[in-house]
Image (cartoon, rainbow, N blue to C red; front, top):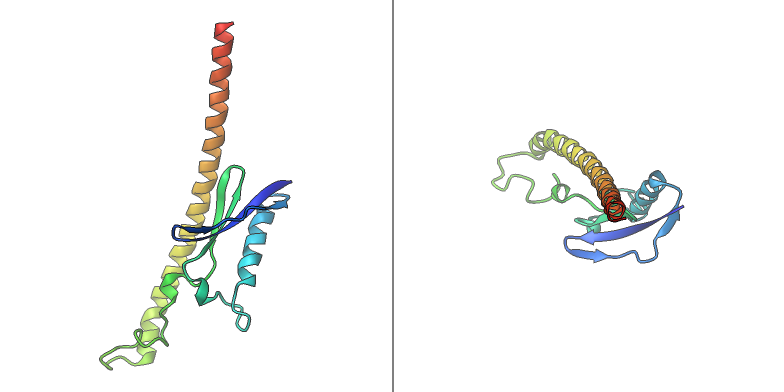
Length: 150
């Protein structure tokens, strides 16, 4: 069993999980993180809460961060079609026109955010593996130096 830590981050502000949780693998840790995010959702809608906008949940093991997910609404979703600034200020656009023009943009934004998340996860995995390789190479070099001296 591996100990996983679930840190909350808002910009440079971090709420550290100092205890951690022992779980069987990274999949279980990811599921636990997503369950925690669901618990912080709005109880009446089940959707991400606006009060957690900009916050991220980071999952860390002994090799470092490998998963990160937003806790609340992404910043781009805070101003929606029902927000006064989203509807044309000059009164020339109807609410339906604004929704029609924003829908494809919102879909594309969601696609890009999902792709960014996948890339971030992949980079975290690669970083973790490169750190392991670096440590192993240092061990091999140290052993080679000891062998050479003997």
